[in-house]
Length: 444
Image 1 (cartoon, rainbow, N blue to C red):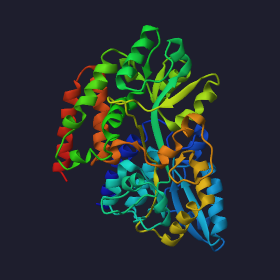
Image 2 (cartoon, rainbow, N blue to C red):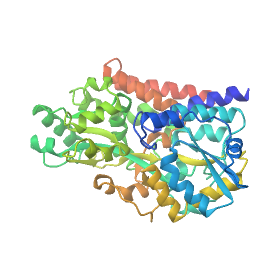
Image 3 (spheres, one colour):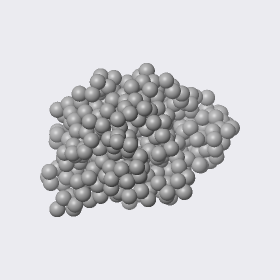
Image 4 (cartoon, one colour):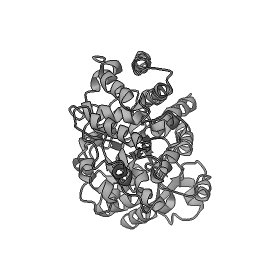
């Protein structure tokens, strides 16, 4: 029975992590070539203690097992730093590529009651990790005083417990091609939704495709408009959906219809996006085939590698009232397994990661925006301008708040695609989200 439960949990977690990471974007995973990924992903899915001992590498040291989706090369400096600071321990880093292979290995370990001392959780999987009681409460770690409340809430519960130590965050917004804007006579990025729609029209009138987006990220435009219109005023307004005092139809109708009327119906966000992967959409933007893209921060540093002449910037989508906020979410966080064989060593590793040296090494390994101030690292200018806002928690991702986040995110992904395809109206899509949410609540 336990094996069945674990495999079921893994399916939900896989969906949740995929949703939170934005489909096929790089997100928290470092870039690797296919040969390296294939080689490292063939490691045996045992708990790690036996393998380390058989290799003769322990030298009497206690092994700390860590199921990681950051590859061994990226984590090398951090691993060595920990082992130097705590010579009594050796880190057995078990790499499984995100996301599917990672979750498959995780599910095997969980079902066998052999979960590694350390593993990771995504913000969208919080409810499942808590429900199965497979993670320690980390709320007493000293580093928590330096981490934003939104990060702790995303990886914890209403009672203040925190189950995943997330030290970084991703953001996403509108990247725009400055040269194409100037070619169409547009001097600055729009500050209101109406201006944004006007800019799209001007671009299209000048023979320039205004927007591009991968099919699995199309909902982001609707979410972004809602974030910059409603969430910017009240970060937790969607709690009303959770407690039954409001619905998706009531909360999202105005912005969802504005999204459709403003950029979908006129074709500024074309139906051709339904046939694009995220990578294809990124390539179109980088190659000047579209003026704007809704993009994830992890992909942006590669823009000028692919096209050194590209002039671009990053902005949040403006809301109906002229305010704006970036989409974003804390990155995956470290969990200490509730039944960890080496719990003391796992906590020692977290203690090291939270030192100034460890934080710098962690940022280098993950290449994300740190949620802890005081860490010395460089970002490209387009992202640097949002460093402090990100640290301060001035970003939002709906599944940080929603109950049953993975399932509802999937419903939104498919529903928005149906609206784009013309098989469903925005209001019909919202009604379907409410119906599915009601079913999930009834099954609790």
